[in-house]
Image 1 (cartoon, rainbow, N blue to C red):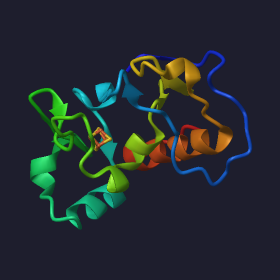
Image 2 (cartoon, rainbow, N blue to C red):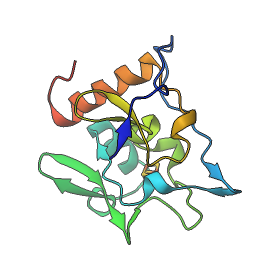
Image 3 (tube, rainbow, N blue to C red):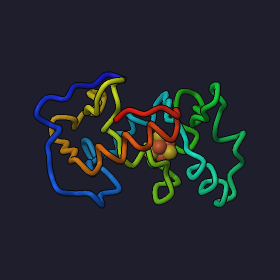
Length: 143
Ligand code: SF4
């Protein structure tokens, strides 16, 4: 994913923040771009939570080495409906909650695929959550 830190990543006091908030409506319709051709990795907690809703792991996710990722169907996340809504929104993976904050291999940046990337504020709490998520998913220390 493409990204750039720019002025959009701000420091702030939000240690308990669990999500990055973005208004995903564009021209009266849900955007959904971040859910096309997704490569979102899933934690064990994500898998358990979604399986708890009755979904089957091998249907909604694929194995990629040691990692599990969301499955795409015709270039769209398994959970994205025809109106570009996430059908498991309240239970969506942690990485989806933190998007468009992404890790570029060195630092947390805002993904420019998101049309609202200029408006996005990612505070320190969300950055830390994302780095901890990367550690859990990929098993390496990014701090
Ligand atoms: S789980 Fe929901 S928010 Fe995450 S990529 Fe799929 S449709 Fe989008």
